[in-house]
Length: 490
Image (cartoon, rainbow, N blue to C red):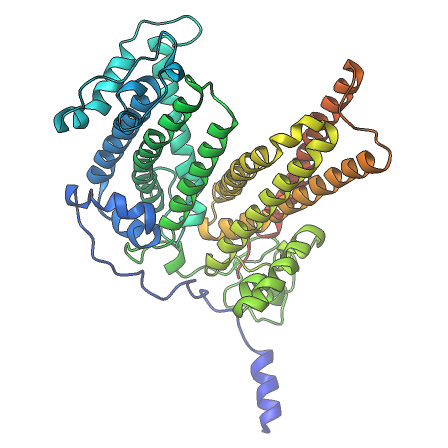
């Protein structure tokens, strides 16, 4: 028999294997960790080296994470309260020469004549919290104790939801039970460790407050506070995301387990069926259910910066415009490239929305131009964080349909392409406003209540319409993606 005939016979009689190979065959990273309280000093390194320290702190256990969280939150909150509520005792403030007239008012006094001792400085953050909590309740300013407890509970619930939304970005293929899996525990511990960043926030507030008080006495909350807070939120989020990037646990979980072949149309077990035949249940060709039919995204398959750059925009275009995109998407592979794609897409979308606010707002209302840059920074930072959490929530929904978290994450990461479409739409609308203002002078500074109403309606109504339309499109595509990847083999 000739070689060509033998090859033809082998191809004609090839069978689907009993099990498809596992997604990962490599072992997780091996790192040296400190268990328990000796790991506490690592929280400082986490703020600046999250990828290196995150994997170590996540493996240090629950006791260290809980103690670090309590120390960080109490100390950081104490510093903030100290700076805001008792500025006259701020040690940074005491070293400055301040005009007494800048501290006029019943709540502001001259700094004390003597400096604080080292022991008083150590106890001051905790004393500030105690003094603040025991202040008399003021109607409309200080909430009742029950309301305070509810707010604290709400903050912890939001923290838990954020940890769960981080699971798709942290997934390395380990078990991912909602509250009991290794992935869930790792994300919750890293969330606790990340809250220690309240300490540098408190220190920054201590350094920032004296200059403000010196400039204008008792400063009301202003846009600078929002800019400062949004930049800190961005820093915290980057630290949290990067800290979840490595896994050092045992090689146990869906990524290290072989998978049962099934028909991608009906779920019938096609193990050991000839590749050239059809599914006995639904008649779909067996070859259309093989893993090789599904391929990674152009961005995930790219090598080098040049290919990644063009692959990024190719993936964006295909994910938004191709209705069969998810039908050919490989969802059983390393999630790292798709995770980077989602972060890039969210950052690009947030930048586009922020730019739209900066250039479109002044054309609707001229005085807005004075604060447009600050508002754009706030919108971009908060928008980026919210978009990433939405992607994580979409993956959680998919994972709830009895599929591996890593495969659900890859599908959800591609959904982030629609945020870029939202950003482009917002930018086009802003440019349209600019064109109207330049060529027809339709939107100069409003001169009467009618103009103000029209500007407010356009400035608020159009973004709401864009967000709603994007949400509806994403929901439709999300259902299609879930259907087309439900029984994927590759």
